[in-house]
Amino acid sequence: MRNSKKHTRKRIKKINPIFVIVLGIALMLGGSWSYQLLQLDRSIEQQKAELESKKLQIIAQNGQLHEEIEKLNTPSYVEQLAREKLGLVRKGEILIAPKESEN
Image (cartoon, rainbow, N blue to C red; front, side, top):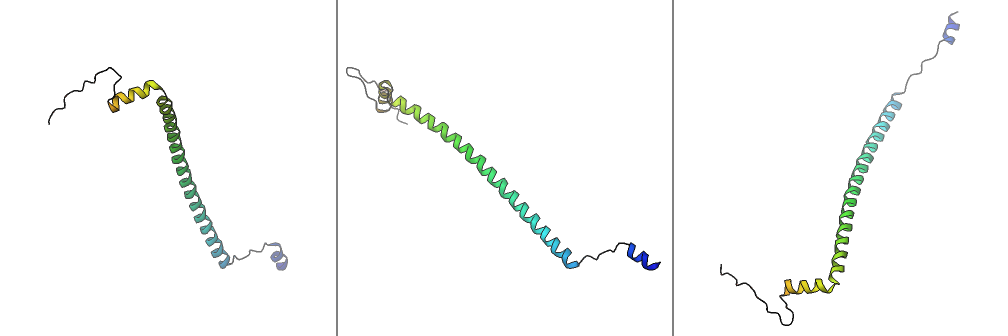
């Protein structure tokens, strides 16, 4: 009767301590690598957002430059710039400049 009880009980296997240590090390390495990958992903996403922002700024600046180029191709704007920046006048006009103060 005792022999039959021994065979009917389930045998409990002992867990090898080396297996536990190796498994623990593997889990720690896997966790560490996963954390590093998540940090790298966050960093890349942040850089991507910054580059997208710079891209939008450059596109806006490019549009402004195109508008300025179109303005520069008009005779009236060229004349306005010549009058304001260079002090040029039309034929028959007299340039009146204010006296500079001595400070």
